[in-house]
Each structure stands twice: as C-alpha cells, then as structure tokens.
Image 1 (cartoon, rainbow, N blue to C red):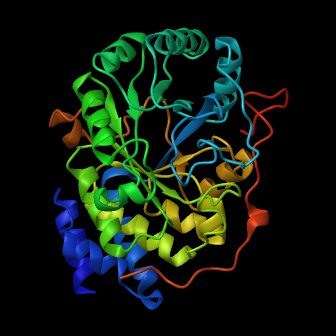
Image 2: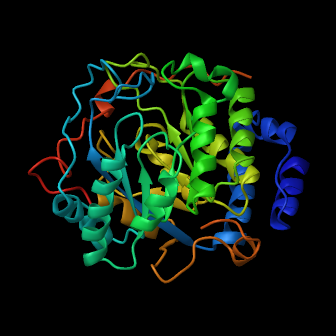
Length: 370
C-alpha cells in the first residue's frame, strides 16, 4: 500500500504520520492487517531492533480512590471487588518489585490510587524507592501517583524516581464523558510538571471506551504535543461495578491497528502494550510485539495478567529478546536531541469470565505473578 510505504519511509527518517494518515491506518480493513503490522514492524525494528522492554507494576495503595474515572475499578463507589489496602510498607513493596526484576523487568512502576500525593506520600515513596534500590541499584523507577502539585516532581526526582506516568486516556473533547472530578487540562498539567521537574514523561491512552477513530487520533496527537518518552496503550478492562462494565467493543484486529497508528505517530518512542492485552489481543498478542517494544510483565494493578513465564515464552517464540538493564531503551538520536529520560467494529461477545480480580502479589500473602 502506498500509504504504508510512505509512512515507513518517513518514520525511518524521524518523521511522524499526519492526523489524516493516522485515521487512514485505523480505517484499513482486516485484509490489509498483516501489511499494517509488517509496516509498523519495520519502524519498530529501525529504532528498537528485536528488544522488548519489561515493566513491572507494584500497586502501593489499592482502591478507595475519590476520583470517578468511569473505566477504573478503584473509582469512587466502585463495586468491582478489587483488593483494597493502604500503603504497603517499603520492604513489602521491595519484595514485590524483586519478583519482577528477577524475571527480567528493567523498570518498576510504583502506583498508588488517589487524586494526587501529599508531601507525606512522597516521603513514603522515597522510603520505598530506597528499599528497592538497596536490592536493585540499577533498576529504573517510574511513579504513578495522580495529579502533581508544584514542586512535587522535583522532590520525586530527588527521591530517585526516573519517570512519571500520567495518562491522557482519551481525547480532550470527550474527557468529561469518562471523568468529572478532574479535567483533561489537569492531566496535561501533571505531565508538563513531571517533565519540568526532570522526570521522563510516560503518558498514554485507553482504547475501547466508545471512542471514534477521530478521538483516537486526537488523543495520540495530544500526547505527541507533550513529548513523552513512553506511550502505554491500554485496552479497556470492563470491570463489573464500573460504568463501563460489559463494554467489549474491541477485536484483536482493531487493537493491532490502534497499536500501529500509535507507532506511526511515535516512531522512536517506547510504545508499550499495557492493560487488557490478554483480553483483547488474545492469540494475536505476539503480533503486537512486532509493533510495540515494551509490555507489562505478569499482573496489573487490580486484575491478573497471563503468567509471567508465558510472557517470557511469548517474547522468545516471536523472535524477540528481553532488553537488558545495560541497554538504553530510546535510540541515540532521540537522546542526543535532549528529550528527557469512523466508530470501531461491532461489539465482541461479552466475556466477563476473562476479567480476573487480582488476589496475589502486593497487598496479599500470596506470591506475585512474575
């Protein structure tokens, strides 16, 4: 396809897709799917070779969130039945992180539910990072603690945080449809504060919430304006007890087209397949690795992922290797540039049995999945 050849040629020279081209990628048919994956794969290999970066989530504080994000199992008043606990002690968090690092994770992502951190919360996170770094001095640490106040990004940087995650999730014009307790502008402000405080920006999206192709393109270019170093692509996990329960709009083919669109917009940025990949990509997960260069290993914040061993086997079987701690994720040219470290297809049948509430790992007495 001329569209794909042009996108590959431009991306391999450092350019990104235009909004119209991004929409065109999303509008391709299933008969062209392998061509789309192959084209995105050529861009992925240009910048990231055959490496897959493993990220590992540790949920430091689960549930009890005062925000009303419609997609979230930890939202205000959710009846999702997920684990609910207050801050993990540093050593418990370090134990959980160690399981992921031992399995090959290069980055540990420390997440806490809530609107945003207090100064005391940042002190807690600092102690947790110290405990993790005592065991694993070289591990990357990403924090995801909600909306940041003035000066908090700098304090996190001093505490040893390398990156900060705060997703835009969806297009600005429809943000109020999924959350009313904070705004899209609040999220943009937090990403800006993270970068200004010396943290690598990690910000992505959630697909499967009723968005159109235009919405997906809008959020992709909203993210591009923020210059993130990593872009997690989440696929909605429709938890019971949330406003989006029973929403199964995605097909594996749709998910792959979304990943490819994001890759063409972010040719030299870490694109990560995040929550929901097992539910929506299903047996096509390995094809996703030909587009994205990172995944989360094992479980997510409140739901179970596939076995960590299965993740590692999938990477090897697809012809990829786990990125080592000694390797730099971002390509050299990007580092040298001074960048800080139509409606979708018909709904798929409801498969509520696929969503498994996490009952192991952080906050429990059972071993983690890694």
